[in-house]
Structure formats: C-alpha cells, structure tokens
Image 1 (cartoon, one colour):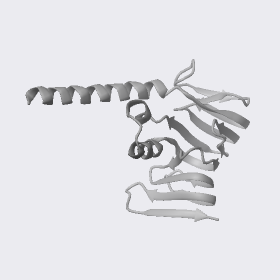
Image 2 (cartoon, rainbow, N blue to C red; image 1 turned 60 degrees about the horizontal axis):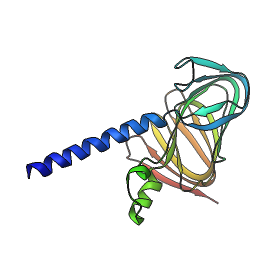
Image 3 (cartoon, rainbow, N blue to C red; image 1 turned 45 degrees about the vertical axis):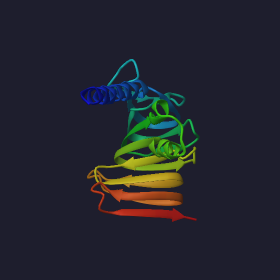
Length: 196
C-alpha cells in the first residue's frame, strides 16, 4: 500500500514538472505577424534580444510571439495570426497576447472523451488593459479566442467583434457575426450571443 502511494505521488510530481517545463518552452512560440502599423506603436517581448524593454515598431512584417505586449500610443496596429484571424488596435490601446498549444495532446492517449478535452483546452487569450480593439476570429479547428479585462471575460469562435475597454477595466462589446460568450470576472453573469 505504501509503495502504491509513493508511486502515485511520484508520477503526479513528474507530470507537473513536465507540464511546467513544456509551458515555459512554448512561451516564445511565434504565433502571428504585424501586418500593418501606423503611428507610434510599442512592443515588449521576453522572446527578443532586448527582453522586457519597450521597442518602437516602425514597419510591418515583424513576428509576434506568445507573451508579447503592445501599446498603441497613437495610430493603429494590425496583427494577423497564423490561422488567418486578425486583430486591430486603435489609439491609446494596451494589450497582451498569450497563445498556448494544447499540452494535453502531448501527454494523453487519444480517446473520444480526451479529444473533446483537448479541443477545449486549445486557446488564445488577449488581455486588454484599455483601448479599442476589433478582431476577426476564424474557426480554426475549435480554437477559442478570449478577451479579458479585470472585470469581464469574452470567449468566441468564428466571430467578428469590437471591444472597447476604459481605464477602469469596464468593457463595451459588440458581436457583428458569429458566436460569443460573455461573463463577468466573478462568474455571476454569463451571456451567450449569436448573431446571424
């Protein structure tokens, strides 16, 4: 009995270590590129030579990594993701992009139940500090995209949305087409929106 407990604790610790190491390895994965930039746009990235420093973006074509943070002081930036989805941010916007691959896929065998869990786990998260963002999210194999503030959380798939966040974290949201799920940070309010 003691051997079984020891073995289960050992395996649990090993799985946690593997997932932790894998997550840090994927933090610098290229996920998009800057397709258009106009005005004064800043980028902070842990995946670049000048880690953690704000860099001025002057031209399109620069690759975007998971964990990159953007500030649009004036003008506009457009980012195109590898799946064809896009995001535009206007004057006085600040946001962070985090996209993680499905880590469950690497460690678990394929079964019907696990396939559903794997699809649910795949995600792209954009933390909006403030500003105006418009996004066109393409259905890329059940990959959900989420936008969050300190007060609200919006998840969507195959949708065109506009999001405006004030300096207090309050969100105004519109869904032009597609499906979105909106909730507050406490989880006490949940809405499903479908246009069409």
